[in-house]
Image 1 (cartoon, rainbow, N blue to C red):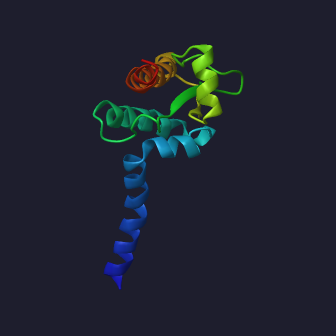
Image 2 (spheres, one colour; image 1 turned 180 degrees about the vertical axis):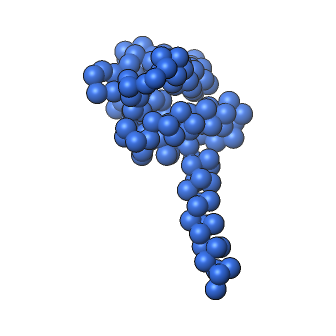
Length: 133
């Protein structure tokens, strides 16, 4: 009985972690817009970027771009022209990520913005410019 209990506890603990690591973009699309998910957002974006850079997942046509926002404003961290941005918004390919401006270290705040911008650049260089050329 004790083994079953520990096995169940291990599955309950490990499954969300495995799902997070296996499906970072899906996680970010669903939960990235909430304030409570900011710490996980900072981990999920580099995982998603790794998958895209190494052609492991997220083929062009199913790509997702992320835009940081907080209670006060949206950040201009998409490397897109206004026409491209409008086209991608109509296709629901731009998701929001919450970025709190209440931080102890300004570098952490700027690193979050840079991480999302680098992710968007990788996706745009791989997918968007291939489609238009």
